Image (tube, rainbow, N blue to C red; front, top):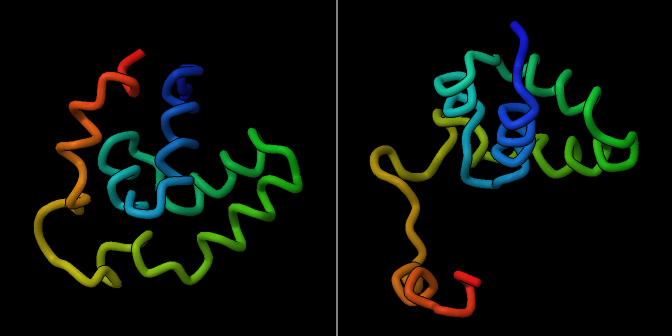
Length: 90
């Protein structure tokens, strides 16, 4: 599977996000967890990859079965305030 530069950037971004599961990446891009790990290893500096692996390993929010909530999405209580913030839209 050949991925565009934009898709690779988005996968890396999703992999760094705490609340984005590996299952969501699989659903959107068709890459399983091991393939995401291989992509991260290939695209990142060794020190950044090690930092990411340490951060992700054992994190319950990265796997749907280990999450504390079943349905819906996490939404910060301040999300509306952040969304309507004119400074963030510059």
